[in-house]
Length: 390
Image 1 (cartoon, rainbow, N blue to C red):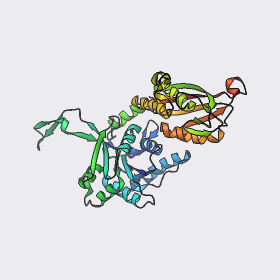
Image 2 (image 1 turned 30 degrees about the vertical axis):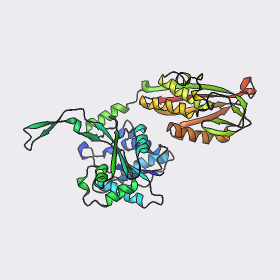
Image 3 (image 1 turned 60 degrees about the vertical axis):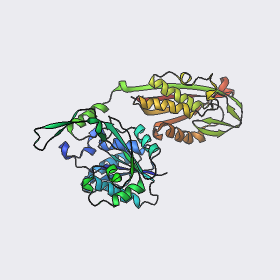
Image 4 (image 1 turned 180 degrees about the horizontal axis):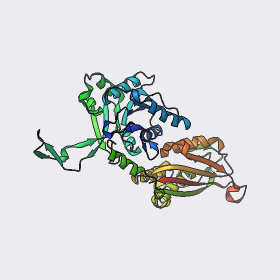
């Protein structure tokens, strides 16, 4: 399954009254567009990210492009948008339709919404199907009035009859592209789901997030700066440690990677000391106890269980608490097997399981210089430290 993302960055920001387009303004030292770029570039299920820009904004995009180049990331050449948002989407879809590996699904997101969460992206991806679109929404909690033409009288309207639509939105690529090909006047359609519905594509709605608001005015920009203001009290460190002894077998499992060996690790689950240690570190950072409290080892329920179950549980708690992983540092302690050749594979697997950029994950391996039970090759231990931001 191929999933592409179109990031829309072509707006002129006329309502913000700034000489520089808002998508290239900084929110606490980071360009607004970078918040969306980082989120989608680092998502393990997204194969391709394309940016759609205004042709008069090339110099601003180059500034951002050079920042990513300095980090070793080469952004794709931008797509030039049209005179309206929907024409820009069409240009992006047309570009993707000419790719050798056309996407099965396409995510469309406005970079003016910088605070999109992985939970929303994951929900969109899990819900989408052929000839289907999935769109996040939030309810309207304020009272609504409708003025008459002279704006002197108004009627109250039932707010339960209305919802507010957000991006990102995801669609079956083939169906959305065909829907756009049939449109003669893009200006009458407010968003991508309205074009899809116009062509009888089914749209499913999922609950969005209030923090994923669109920056339109100066007060919105001020709110964004307040939300991202650096505050060390929001940083939390967690430490985890786990050890398992050897028993007879033909492999060990570390960080979700199967490593051939003359023994295996003994445990109630698959005895993956790396994932157990990482789970405990996340729980510690969140102040949520330890792995034994959530998955008691005196229960047969977890016999031979894949340890990714435990880590997924900790990740859901992290998401529920609006936390993000900043970095992970893992130390594997054993005489044998030799870990060096498996470090990259372990790092990749942990990146997938935690939705964390590989550059923010470090794997170390050491021995106890033949001392103690680890030095006698009786087992493997692992220590993990994580830094999260809430």
